Amino acid sequence: MIGGGDPQGAWTYVAPMIAIIVIVLRGVRTRKLRIERMWIMPALILLVVGITLGLQPPRRFAVLVAEVFALGVGLGMGWWRGRTTNIMIDAATHELTSRSSPIGMALIASLFLIRFALKDYATLHARELHVAAGDIAEVFLLMAAGLICAQRLEMWIRARRLLAQARAAP
Image (cartoon, rainbow, N blue to C red; front, top):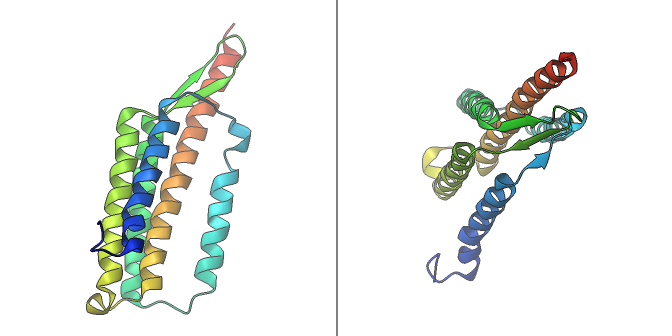
C-alpha cells in the first residue's frame, strides 16, 4: 500500500492526484471570462492570508525571507501562467472566453507536485530544518496566493485591452 501501510498515507498521495486531474479537466475546456468578477478570488485569498498571518506570532527573520521568496515565486509563476492562458473575444457580442494552455496546465500540475513533495519533506523534517509546521504552511500559502493574484491580474489586464480594442473597432 502507498505510504508504508498507513491507510491515511494513501490519501496523502491520492488527494493531490485528484486535484491535478480536476485542474487539467477544467483547463481543457473553454470558459466564459467575466472581467467584472475576476477580483473576487484574489480578494478572498488576500483576506484569508491576512487573517492567517495576523493571528500568528512575529516571525523569525529566516521565515520572513522564505515567505517573501515564496511570494515572489508565486507572483512570477502566476504572471507567467496568466500570460499562457488563451483569451478570446467574440467580435460581435464582445463576450470573452478563456482556456488554459497546455504549458500553463503542465506548469500548475508540476508546481502542485513540487509543492506537495516539498511540503511533505519539510513537515516530516521540520525539527531538523528548525522550522515549525505552521511556518511551512504559511510559506506555501503565500506562494499560492501570489500565483492566483498575479494570474488573475495579468488576465484582467489583457482581457480589458482586448475588450477596449473590440469596442473601438468599427
